[in-house]
Figure 1 (cartoon, one colour):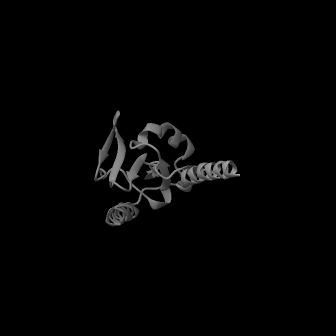
Figure 2 (cartoon, helix red, strand yellow):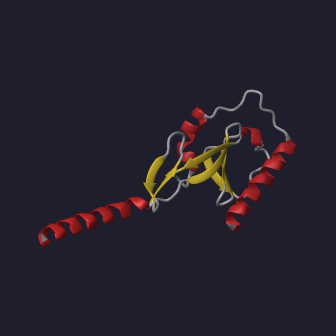
Figure 3 (cartoon, rainbow, N blue to C red):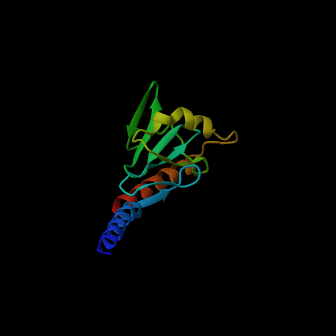
Length: 140
């Protein structure tokens, strides 16, 4: 009888170890149903992508990523010839610290709107929104 109790307790310990490993699971959405990963997994980087100008904004660092001639550049302030518009913004969660590594796929999936027109007022508002979003992220 005592051997039976040892076997049950061994199974209980094994079950507790397995359940403890599953408690740390979290879910996040990435273009579809939730993907479950361990809570120790780094969460993907949150970006805003502007298809019309092909610019990425990294919310947590406050950097813009844009193409200048043949190279991708990262800068805190976007050059004035790039125009941003909230109507053109797409939220992306990317598992890389360089968003342009998947730019070809992003360009195919998120096409610029045909009726998109550049507006200085909307550009100022969007840049201000991005700065505020970064500040909120940094101060939390």
